[in-house]
Image (cartoon, rainbow, N blue to C red):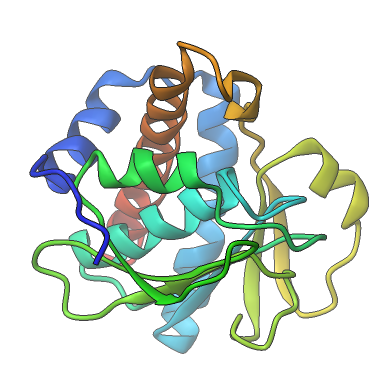
Length: 210
C-alpha cells in the first residue's frame, strides 16, 4: 500500500469549486459536457467518460480520478476511464498530488515503466484501476463520452469511432515544473483546477436530471 495523507478529499473537492474562478467561456464548455452527460444518463441510467491526453500520465489521469470521486459524491452512476494516443506511465508526481489530498494508491502490478494502481478514497465502496494506456484499451468501456485534456490530443484524435461525442477541455500541462522547486505547487494547482471543473460538471448533471 502506498500511503496517502490524512487530508480530506471531500474538503479539497468542495473547496476547489469554491476557490477556482471559472471564466464564462470555460463555464460554457463545462455546461455543454454536463448537458450531454445528463441526456445520456436519462436514456441509459449510466454514463462512461473517457479522459484522453497524449501520454495518459497527468491531466487525463487527474480527470479520471476526480470523476470517479465525483460519481460517489453526487451519487451518480458514472464510470470514468482515461487513455492516451501513446502509452507512458501514470506519472509519479500525479500520484503524489492525489495522495496529498487523501486518495489511496495500492500497487497492483509493479513495473518501472508503467505500474498499475488500485485507487480509492476513505468511504469508497469500490476502486478503479489506473495505469497509462491507449484510449481504446479494452478496459475502457464503450460507448463513452470522450473528453480530451491537451492540445496534442485534440490534434491527434480528430475522430474517435467509439465516442458518443467528443469535447475538448484543455488544461495546462504541469510537466513544465518537473524537477523544480515549484513542482508540488504547480501539480497541486492543476489538481485543484481539474477538481473544480469536474465538480461543476457533476453538480450540473445532478441538477439537470432532477
